[in-house]
Image (tube, rainbow over the protein chains, first blue to last red):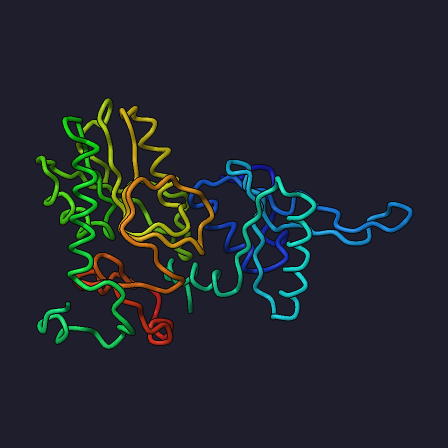
Length: 114
Length: 191
């Protein structure tokens, strides 16, 4: 189902794993938006945004952001730092992180791991 | 403890038994006692989700202090190829749940996606109440928060088989819950 971004072409996703997760959510009739919000994390002295974070998905029904992280550990560490900062600056927003191991288990659960 | 007959039938893919028959039996009995107390003199309808919750549902119902004939429901599974569209009920209940207290029985709650769908569908049928009872609960993969009223065991981030839990439709019949050797499982072909 999905709303608005659900109708984006497959090429609109940055990664194959995001496309797959969107497929699961569509199958279970969970509305989702792809990268709908960019959260500013740092500003310079002129007030310009110098660092930001854009979670992969937003599930309006559950008011939940979902970040899918299937990259290498050095980049995961950087992303974890951003997410910690997001939680500090925006404590009212819920975010769920699916790491590589979580994502592989999700695929395994659905019998999709090849 | 595990019986000798069970030990002889442990498949090679089993890595470690997490909950043996006795542990499961005791916990099911405890849950049944609690449910019997909470639903005493109420019009309870137990609904098991196929296939995973079949064994758990049957064992649980046997231990209730009042007679209950369970119903079963089955939903379609996600398939990459061919694309299966949206989730749907492929085996529905034969009885009306309107005005009844419904207890939905699941084998394991992890993503919450299956239960989220079923809760919405069954709530439209106007039951007097709708509650969840699950044998196992695993939080790591949770995408949708589900209100669980009765829960057997919390489990860690491991792939489990047995007592209804399967890997590509195998190992459901095992009388215990066990972790699976993932490398062995990953090497098998898709359904």
